[in-house]
Length: 403
Ligand SMILES: *Cc1c(COP(=O)(O)O)cnc(C)c1O
Image (cartoon, rainbow, N blue to C red; front, side):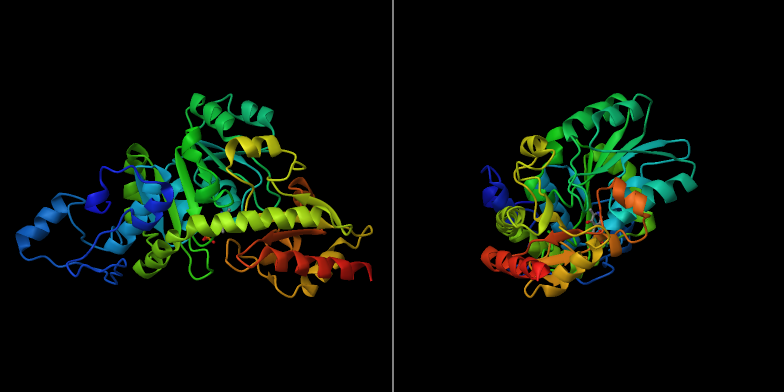
């Protein structure tokens, strides 16, 4: 719900991030109010009866809806152009709710293999326990999607760009194939961010977020979101209401305020990430840089078609003699002074991680190799520091390798 005076003005996305969804209380506050309440009271028994007979007419219980959470949901849905948003306690609650809420025994999921570890667990371990068939494909290969979707399917699940190697999936092509096979398409848009990639434009049915990442953007709290149209929402709503992945009003309030600066932060971080990627590519101690905004990225043409800019993440391999990739990558991490070691991402602080020993530790060497992760691979999440300081920090750490 927009401020009343703005109803008939077409507003730009940045303005929506500041105003959309605002519901003022009777106290006329400027900043969105935080409603830390689990329940709501009724003036009469008849009012309570009416509220339970007519879902959505008012707030009845914060597991279902809460005014602060509703402001966050409406702001994100308006920005993304979807009819509905369900906020959740974490990104994984969003992924689990969207996937399990839409499936039943006998259904078939086709998913890209390059997924965030916990997402892979949901589609490849949990779903099959309930009689769902899961087929994994190399998301970068159109022919693998074509083969897997030549048979009917219920759901397609994918992540683009992927973690950590920033592989892309062609959203337009896969969505067309999925719809022909009768499947709904669910996209984990965390690495794309709401700013740089708009899955709705390619016909994607459901978008899921870890709001823990760029939407908060300041490393403070967990949160997630599911975006979809009313038809899909009608299927998901009972599952979500009765299983309770609900976000706390406090976290929703933090995310709501985070959205006001989302575009400014992501644009600045993406510009810095490009500068960092270029500097890394020019450094003699770097063997490979993967960044969708660089012409050297194997899918740069696709990145230009479906993303507004590269990403806030950069993936690179340190140059090292055979068998010394891990030692070289660790030496670079340990020599950094501004960039800190953390497996989180999308923060205002630049964070670096060694996927092979952290986020992807549980995979075998062969599985890591399939995903493009070598012992020398590092994933950098670029923050809001001055990019010149980040480049200088990486340079001194990489220069020290040769000594
Ligand atoms: C972090 C992340 C998730 C999970 O989100 P949480 O908020 O940690 O539960 C899912 N997908 C991707 C791509 C992520 O980066």
